Every structure is written in C-alpha cells, then in structure tokens.
Image (cartoon, rainbow, N blue to C red):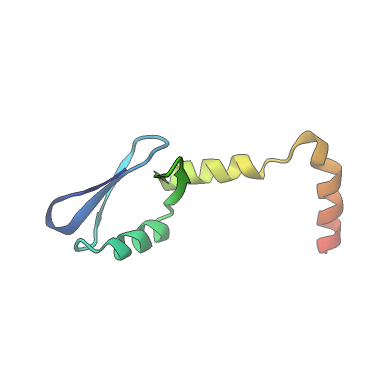
Length: 84
C-alpha cells in the first residue's frame, strides 16, 4: 500500500512483511516509482490491485522461484553444460 505523507513524501508498506519505507520525492509519482525500483522494491498486480514488496521480500520471492523442481535437475545440468 502507498500513502501520501506530508511535504511530498510517500509511505510504502510492503504487502509481504508490513515494513514501511518513506520516500521523499516532492510528491512526484513517477519519481516514486523510479526510486522504489532503484531501492529494490517490486510490484505485482493481484486481482486488479497492485501489491508492493520490499527488497527483502522481493529477494525471497526470487530465491523461491529459482529453486529447481526435483524432476528438472537433469535438464538443468544439460543446459548449464551447453552455456560453456
């Protein structure tokens, strides 16, 4: 969730863990999006609503997605060899 704060700030709450980070961007929405991305925040649209994830939760999500399934081990080994 993103809430407009005082003096052009935005408070961004992580939908994963609830941590809040304040961005001072002079009220500029485009600058907020840019600074969030630069800081490692990610967003995902779920049921027509945007969810925002802090760098820690974003990294955990990526780590889980990168884990191979047990059935994929042999295929990934072959792909890795081809890359060399």
